[in-house]
Length: 180
Length: 444
Ligand SMILES: Cc1cc2nc3c(=O)[nH]c(=O)nc-3n(C[C@H](O)[C@H](O)[C@H](O)COP(=O)(O)O)c2cc1C
Ligand code: FES
Image (tube, protein in one colour):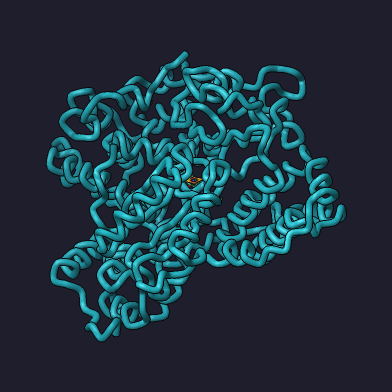
């Protein structure tokens, strides 16, 4: 159980999940596993507990191990609890050439955590990730569905303040903010 | 120059919506294909166009299409590769975000040509918001009769779906992509059988990059011969280049193949020169996997010819003095860049992204990262440079998929062209004992 909550999709999510499974030929419903895990992660506290994965297995009708082996392969799935805002800073190539390390160390200082850790109030997790396909607007970071590009340290500060004031969990499945 | 075939309308406000896209000639290729052409004739036009895969390998698209097996009563699939994870590459995102209907249109025309009735666009999970843009465009296409049953009153029907991944560079490799699409780990498959014979669900499948599929639209609209007139030699058409790094004007540029690298870097039409008036040191011309070249060799070939933005010219001289067009991820480095540290950054990437199936790649990428880290922190010896060379040579060509090669080439080329810088590093770096940095880099 996640914080004692029952693991069960909302009616809306369940309907979406069932629609998704129809996208594949008869007998190939396992194809929907990754999209469904995204929905589950968003709905059940931002990470995939073994209860969540067992539940997803039962919804699709596959073995739990088939879910574990997939969930653990992909970097967007969190295998342990994370903060409400997972800040993912690109550390590769052009972002690195243009100051990603400064952004990361600035965030480590500001949030008083190291990369990979979560703040004690459970608000932020800081991660460094590989190229997010936004190299022309480096340095950049992703939080939930949104890309924040052409970062300066000031911009990072004001974003962090905004997320803190907002206080909501951010997930990949959120509707993205309007882009320029 | 300046001919555009894909992004010619990208400045039009609202081109991301169906109405505006259609008003500007959108979906004409589908009309032409379904109403006036046979599938075989479409494949023929694509062959004539000389189009080569834009995902990195540059394989002729028409030829790939003609290899597709067509056993009676077996479904065929076309899967669009929108995984775009090669560092330095962001053109597919730009295209999908700006002109989503161009990809949808290309998918319909291509699916008709190959006789696929269900097609998928596999997009990297981080591009979730782009997936939503595509889904909206697909809904609009269904609502206007371009998708679904009996398209334009023909007996051709097509369903098109977007599938998101979840963060794994390897899923851009086509067989890993198919595994992922089937709901599994992204472990590449042993070839043969090739996807053209046994791909998605064991059925004949074509996997093509976003830009490749989009290029089918102008090819069908204007004819393969017209397309082949653009570009130079066997590098026909235009190419989307993702330009980044130390340049004044980073961004996505559609270029006619054949412009000089020098113009591309220094002209205000494209990169606009090196940032802050600095000097050019090196370029990685086709995404992180292709060999890095020093300034003199990227601007001119070893024979002193101007280097052009084309498959052939960038490859001129082989790996000794040339590189590859790859995905068109053009990463520019100025004189202040440390080639050694940049290489460490790349090797960390490949180590992180190796799927772990083949030991040369799984172990070798980790060792290359460690040895480079040791050199950077001042604990290296001259023999470590040879050790790096040795490790990369034992990965290349010895793995199931080309990720191993992709990890080896940056190391080999950096040592080939910048050996003195590695040796300087070994001789002159201060010994760093900074457990903090080690920790923050190691913890994901
Ligand atoms: C490690 C690795 C990563 C790749 N990533 C991508 C990618 O992100 N996008 C892409 O289109 N092709 C990628 N490819 C190439 C694909 O395997 C395949 O060749 C390509 O999708 C074919 O499409 P095309 O012929 O239209 O280029 C990758 C290959 C390897 C080995
Ligand atoms: S290098 Fe950071 S987004 Fe590509």
